[in-house]
Image 1 (cartoon, rainbow, N blue to C red):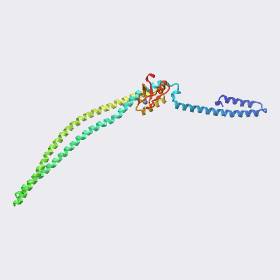
Image 2: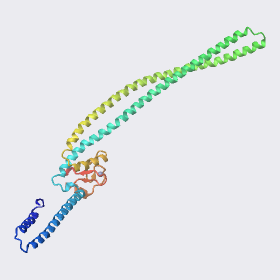
Image 3: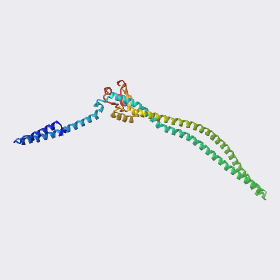
Image 4: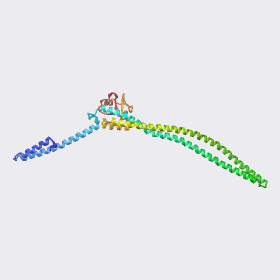
Length: 312
Ligand SMILES: [Zn+2]
């Protein structure tokens, strides 16, 4: 009974009166009135609840329609904007550093690939050199075989009895000598080739040694840069956590959503009548709305939050 308040107490009192009154003919009339009041009481409670429910619904809808800032008087939009601008400075640096951090492995990989390509070229030349040497050794074996053939044929000359056979053998020996001469020529050329390749190999070795030095130096610098960036990000992260204190959760989530989708830039100043993010025109109505300082105004083109420097 008590939880329904004064109205219920009133009905309770009536009930009491009815019960303590002497039972004359009017008792039935009182009970009928009480039942009537009870119906009214139930209706009153029901409709009160409906009203409260509707009011809460309307409140929520209004909040979504115009933004909480308009109906929460203890949040100063001006103060929030200042806090968000400070936060943006930190987050902008974090965004740039994270981009640099993301690019570093690719840059290091590119440097490594260039160096590996150089080493690959040297390896190719060394293989070419080996192939030329193997080729020359084969030619030297061929030469040796031709010399053996000539010696053998020369030895056979003394055993030949007819002129015809002798002439044929001499011709055969001359033929072998001609082949031998071609092989000797090829061996000489092969020496020239291996000398030339050897020259290239030595030159390339020097180049690789020089480039390896440069590559290792760059790698060291790059790894150092990564450590510096990571350390700076750690410092900025801690500053970020301090900076978000005091920013209303609704504003913060709105800011973070824009930050994620707009390349690390969520809040920008209006420069003249231009958005500092997308450089499109900001209408006078929007400028007036920003000057009111009672809500966060977003650019119609890029959706970034806008502020006017002098207004803060
Ligand atoms: Zn814009």
